[in-house]
Image (cartoon, rainbow, N blue to C red):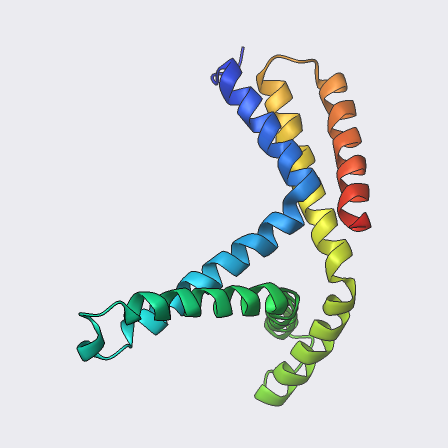
Length: 168
């Protein structure tokens, strides 16, 4: 028997199913909330000290939160593709395939970002579906389910999760 209990396994399977079916939407929501909270805090923190006694800093926080959440939601794909493009460029630079200079990094980052941006929805759906299927597999194994059946269920969760996430 596995060192984790039944409820731990059940939670792991549940988190796996949620991740496989709604991972991309959850990531986008989380990015919106984080960006909204950060922008709301900036609006609140940089309001003048004379305004601290009034209700205006709270209103500024709420305004910053709403604006930041909308920016975070709409810029999610762009930010993830730019960061991924930069990581791929740095990997190519560190392996020595490309001469290391700023122009090459910029050009490669933008080129890879454009490719990744075009494939972003499918790649995110694939990644989250695979992650969710892995969680389901580990949870079922920890619950004492046979490995072959666990793998079959995990593959089904992966396929269904990918289909659900790419449809809409």
